[in-house]
Amino acid sequence: MAFSLNRVIIIGNLGGEPEFRTTPQGLQVCQFRVATNERLPDKSGGWRDETEWHRVVVFGSTAEYASRTLKKGSKVCIEGRNKTRSYEKNGETHYVTEVIARNIVFLDSKGERGTTSSESFESEIDTTSFYLNDIQNNTEETPKDYPSDDDLPF
Image 1 (cartoon, helix red, strand yellow):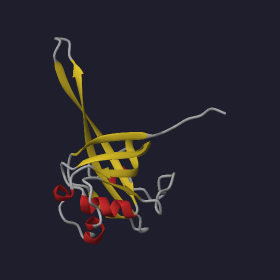
Image 2 (tube, helix red, strand yellow; image 1 turned 180 degrees about the vertical axis):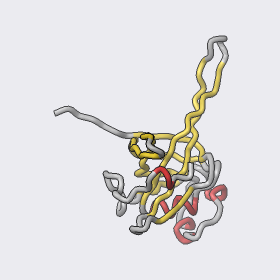
Image 3 (cartoon, helix red, strand yellow; image 1 turned 90 degrees about the vertical axis):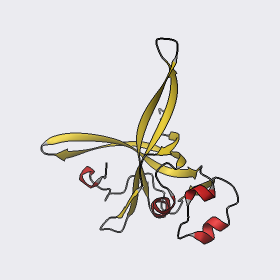
């Protein structure tokens, strides 16, 4: 039996405000984009910065908390898996690759995150980063009522 692994870890900054919604079936979904930067040598012996944009999707209570806590520019570490899906639009097949987040580490200090409606949770956190793992809603498979790309904000 062959071994395979689908694991993604990215550290970067949100490129815009998170988009939160609840599907008709009651599933909470939060989507946002994260920019990662890498410094690479160029042909002239100097350096160039290369930015890669990643679509991130979070489900369940983690989605709700992320939507309230994250903001444009927030620094995060995302651990999850890549998922490519397809959809039809105007007779054409389109493909989208996303990071389905399992864990989020908020790397901004508590003061930079701003206030949320879960003040009691935040008041127990003394460090500048914390680990959020939605064990209760963490599933291996993408939920069946996952939104189509027509519903995506980007």
